[in-house]
Image (tube, rainbow, N blue to C red; front, side, top):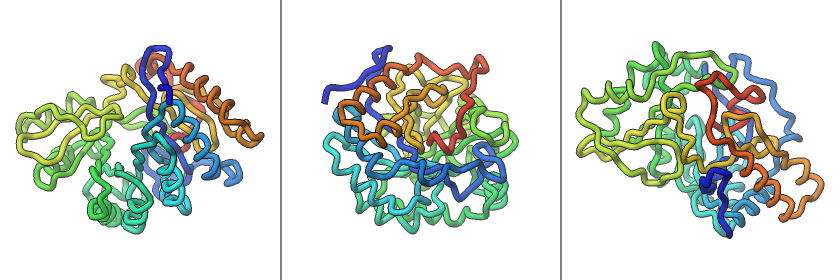
Length: 325
């Protein structure tokens, strides 16, 4: 293992893998009500192909893998993929981002297969509002899934709340209290003008933090797994933490350490850029590990210094559910 770094001397050790573009919810900021045009299943990478990419990436220095979607748990036999990835030398951290609807069903088998932890997308604790945001009445399933994940040992379970002005921003204190009362780990995320859903007004992280001060001062906190863009804090005496992910007001590009493998086999060096390197074509033609290694290094070399959201430059090619966020 040699270690990867980009043109700006940022170490690259984290691979996010979108395993499906299907989803069992229709969140306002991600998809239109009718969904998107789905890829034919024949165009989606097989587990063996994902394993081949991850194995080559690990040989270059990738140590962390996160599975995303769409909703990754709607893809059949996901624990089998996790087991395949857990056997790769050099991969020491496998995690999952999910909407939690199916988590109760799969938590134990995911843990047994080698999954370390989960992030659950949860934007509200109100049943009616959940139905409005996701277009499905599944809040109870998500809450049950969170508890099942904790019981299975998939910890820390982190909750991702996309904060939308006039939609759910009145609940930030409710979520913050859960870090004190129940030891939850909550991350507040600014809405990005991205995807093919509704355009919703974002709330800056600084404003959210200011609101939280009514519960007491926030102390800086080190994350248990430091591989993402969040800045972490906690209230005095709280077992849980609060994170802020602020792509708009305070971009996190200066320490970006990740690549994204899309559901149809392209390697994307930046979530917020349309630059991609095709891996599926070479894989289908029997590419050697050496050729895959060269293509991965090509993607790393193409990482931009930062995104350009503030200048109004938005990625156009894909919906968020095809990239994995």
